[in-house]
Image (tube, rainbow, N blue to C red; front, side):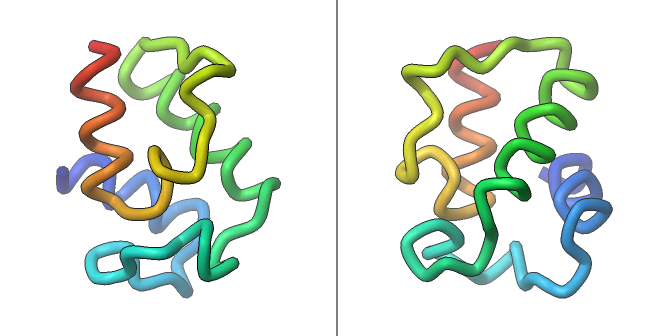
Length: 73
């Protein structure tokens, strides 16, 4: 998860990704941020995130994002 945290911090270093559980629902990150996160994950982990997986539940926290990566790897 350290690798993922670094990726997220590169995109938005002003967000507490380690503790925030409502990144999407709380409007902490924007749709542009999500696109950047998806692109970074695609590049870093060599996985493709299908449109059906781009839902708030998969991006609301670093744990949810890591679970998504694990599931698609």
